[in-house]
Image 1 (tube, one colour):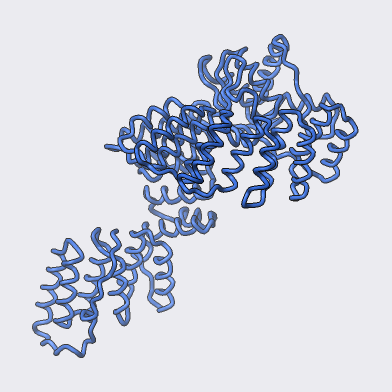
Image 2: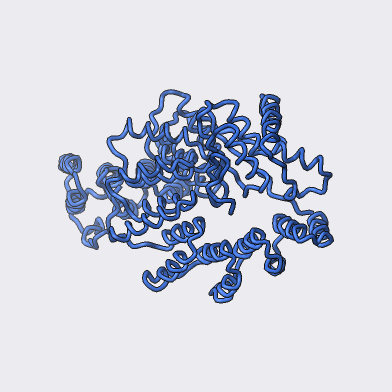
Length: 575
């Protein structure tokens, strides 16, 4: 509904006694006249004229006339809820009908909180709710409101109690779960809705489900939803198209993302931002920078989010000089103040190039205090370049911040071991046990036949886990002939070597790969989504598998993609 500012019309709202009494015999005729005029209204201008006529004739205080006036103002497509609220406030004793009208109007306007507040006021005034007080649309507003308040249990309870569900009801429930990042639930709810066979999904619910596909890496389902949109809509708006591009890029399908982007009739800042960031996380730095130049030529101004994507592109592609140049341009030409995320990109870039002195100087110049993420990026760089001195200094900084990340200790322990400082390596590992630290539990998602399967290490929850484990043994047999040797250096637990090898053998990513090899055709790309950074052993393992089984394996972790093909990885072994 269109919301318009209310014009100051004090002469309209006058007291009843300012008008002469109208003879009873003429009241009904005048009522009919006003109702007839209301039915002809197609815009607010006409409604205001009828409102004025009612006041002149003394009919505003006639419950039948004012109820019709309120309903037309609140529920018409051209109506105005601000004006309707003003009319409602002039009613001395609004009844159930008037309250129902306002509740429906606010719900239609997606102002769910006002709708609920009116319902509470209705009860406080001792107006009895009727069947029209609880329309499906009001219940949808409750689902939306509970979703925004993160009260998902109440959200589901309202939905379950609805006798007559609608597409809007399902859409509100999916959106509520999407707002909380409950992506598995989004797909399950959508599946239940489509399983009933009597609903035609609307654009809003499809956008929420596409977002779920994006987060879970469900490319095949995302493609199906794209096809559904194309078949059932005459055209896609820029928001839906951008959402689809984001899905394709984050599900590892660069070609489809680029194709859709190039076909867009209208591109905006968000479209370019999504595409630049998408290319960046795949390591396609030069292509991302080319797109950034194109955006500037189109006269579209960048913001801090666009620049974050641009600097990430430089970071993943190792473009040090270009990254420093753009960091300077962001501040001086586009007058954008860098956030800690922008500084983090530059520091990671400098660390990648082993420019540690310059990185430390930049940290000292930062207008904000460095956080653990900033220091951890330098720790990773120190590990890659075997710079024990920098590693120790960074680790001290992390300890001062109160960081209790087990991964930091693992990196330092491995660096000590590499430098043959065995006592320091053992002491660092002992701190992990003494402080009761543990690594974040890793999980891997893989989509097979439009269904997303989740695996954790040592997983036996699948009904065909024995088949998967047998496949692991077959893969190991071939890996040995290719020269693969397990790397147990990043296994945290204080256990013997044989048990460490057992933990590596049934790693979540290896189980996901085994399942995909068993259940997909030989030429199919395997796409995996992980919640944590890949360890060195799994990275090496996957490179070997890509050669042995002649598969492209695309793995998405927290900050980037890895494309494994013919025994190499797109990250060039720096991640």
